[in-house]
Each structure stands twice: as C-alpha cells, then as structure tokens.
Image (cartoon, rainbow, N blue to C red):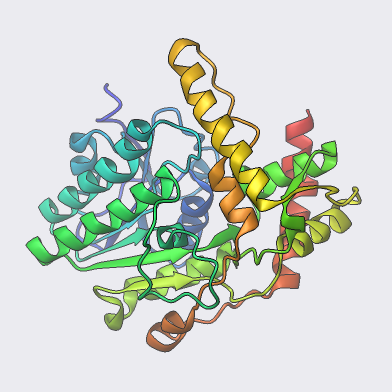
Length: 353
C-alpha cells in the first residue's frame, strides 16, 4: 500500500459532516483534533508517513497518510469532507526558499484545489501575523499591508494567503483566514519547549533585553476562534488576527517559565541590530554549508527569531471579538501554569531521557 492510499483508525461516515485537518499531528492541529472529537465531530486527520501520531491514535479519528506536495493524496483525503482546517505548514527560519515554498505555497494550492473538487463547504486557513512583516506598531489590525521583505517564511505565508483569496474568487470557495500570533501552551515543543531547554541549559538568548511584546495567544483560545470561524456566517471571506491582546514581554514570559521550572532566568541578551546581523550571517552561511554537506541542525540564531523576539508583536483582536463574538477564555496565569505543568510532567523529562 502506498503512503497516499493509507487510511487507518475509525472510518468516517461521508453522509454526516466530516472535518479534514491537515497538519493534525502538529501542536495546533493536535489540539484542534481533540476539541472537535470532544464536540462529537467526525474527523479525518491528514498526516505525513513520518509523523508522530501517538496522540491521534488514541482518539476516534480516521488517519489519512499523504503529503501536502502530493495533490492526489489530498484529493483522496478531502473526498466526502464538509469542512477543512488547513493547519499544515513548514515553520522554518533556515530552510531553503524552495523547501519552505513547496509546503506553504504549493501545498496550500493543492489543499484548495482538493477543497474545490470535493465541494467543501468551508475551509479555515491557518496563517500567521508574520504576514505583516513585523511592523512593530501598536494594535496592528487586519487592514495593515506589509511594505518590506522580512524573511522567506513570512513571504511564503503571505503568498499562501493570496492563493486562498484567488481560489475563493475563482471558484466561490467559502474561506476564512486566521492569523495567530505567538501560540503557546502544552505540547508547544518547537517554541516553548526549546525556550525551556535553553533556559535550563543557561544559554537562552533574549533580544534587546526581552522588552518586546511577545504577542501571546494560548492554544485553547486559538482553537475557540477556529471553531467560531467554522460556524459563524459572518466569518466568510474574512481574515482575523488571533491573539490574547496581552502586553506581556518576552522577559516577563521567560521569567514566568523560569519561576515555574525553578531554573535561572535568561541572562544573555544582544541589541537588536547586532542580533539581526549575526542571524543574517549564520542563516546564509548555514544554507551554503547545507548544499555540500548533510548538516541537519539549525543555526543558533536566525533573522526570523530575532524579528519575533526583538520587535513588538502587538496585534489587534478587535475584529474577531466584534464579528465572531470571540473572547480569550483562558487568562495568562492559567495558560502559563498549564504550560509549565506540561514542561515538568512530559516534555523536559522526555527531552532529558
């Protein structure tokens, strides 16, 4: 059996509403899957052959194995589905342009074409506030348009949004775009987990003293917004920032993690201009080395990381509040405590074993 044909788990009933989730084995996709199953929805999870599906295997879901770069596997996965949540993406600050675009742009195009062919009723596309290009302004809303290039990841996510709008216009596809900011919470291995490991090892690096607004969004609050975007008639054709609206800085966030984990606070910092220059050099040098070696460890610092850590991530959530009736239901203290508990009980133990 090829990876494109493989299905396992609880078979869905196409005569009832079925939700397809791409990137279902990831941090956000996993939380979304759990929520939809808990609400009694039928869920088909689209994952790669190499994905860790240990969480999904415990749920009553159907698992479709394929790849965003393979249109055929997506067409088969979307068949019979009423709704599609496109969470799958390559979040990379050091991959080549071609590697990132093949997933974030071409992969999104393949998802949209599969949605059109399957007569999907609504698609929820997960984008990012990175599409604004890190303007560093206060309360950036959905009307803001980036005017300068920042990094290839942000560019590919911007291009993916353009694909959503193009297909929606051409085929009448009902599409909603969500732009989460810095999503944190249990199972955030690639962001919170890496920060916690760096702090425990004593080499967490802040930018500009960590004074920039982190733009935090607790993962359950994002999932609330996604469910509302699925069901709310006013959501059609709109893009929404999803952020808790907190003025918590990276220094405050990392200090909170340090207190919860009983480890030293982050003590290293670089000014923004210096960190950005180092990130640029490491990024380009790394890509050059990758062409001639099998190096598969990311550089110590990248421009994307510097932008996120060193520029205020302050985005307005007013549109989601007013149009969808969304409110961040989990407050910062509760979200931080749940995140620390996960780090203590699961992530750091497995990372150190």
